[in-house]
Amino acid sequence: MDFETEKVKHIQAVFTSKHHRLKVPDSQFSIPVSANRRDLSSLIAHFLEGSGSDNDDGEAERETEFIIRGDLLRSSLESHLANKTVSSEAVIEIEVIERNPPPRLADVFDHKDWVSGVHINTHYILTGSYDSTVRIWTHDGQMKCSAEGHTSPVKDVVWISSDASSSDSGRVLFASASQDQNVHIWSLAESTAEPQVEHLHTCKGHARSVESLAVNPSHDKVENCYPHYVCTASARAKYLFIAVQCVLG
Image (cartoon, rainbow, N blue to C red; front, side):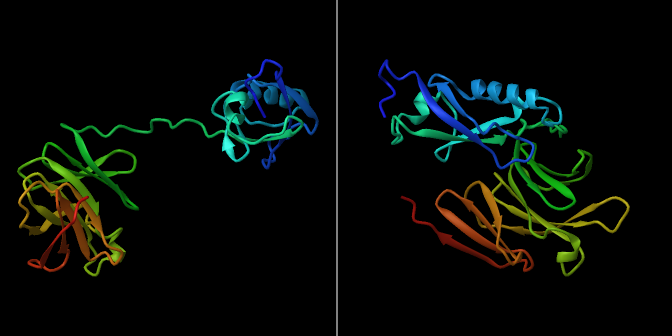
């Protein structure tokens, strides 16, 4: 269908929805090809208001999105359908869905310098900063404790065990990587009134800044990397360290 010709001004469309709150009209509409998401939202909002449908806060336009031929409508109908094979006699089916509200700021975790790494487990949020410090926060933004041992900016942090129940020693393990070329393994004791951090091991042997960390599925090894290398360090054995050179394209 050629939507660039002056003769084509409208398309025929029907609305459908799988959401019980969006009782869309089942009649056929003639809609200008210049219509966009906001235009269709206004149309649906007007219908829902007139039909008395329940839409919680009444902001149907803000909450409404449209799927046409498998894709979300992000432009005008004309632009959206331009690259799709559509007969000039076709009735376009437009699925109406609820639009997710934009994210809302819940809290702010203040740091003295850039934040370079964040990892979340069941109870805490682990952060690494360019002030060379690792911090542990509750989910509501309260800092519980910190781990200091790096001499250069921290580049990444990772939980090795998700909670104390997954660790043989009853401790939560985590790791931090830094520009000081070291990876530190730490333990967090949750049994005390205030969580306490203990330094366990230092993984040495890098020739450059350690940029990132990852934990294998069994939670007993930490993958750490810097340009041209990926290294594997055991989280439980103090001196086991294996370096594998990567082939970079």
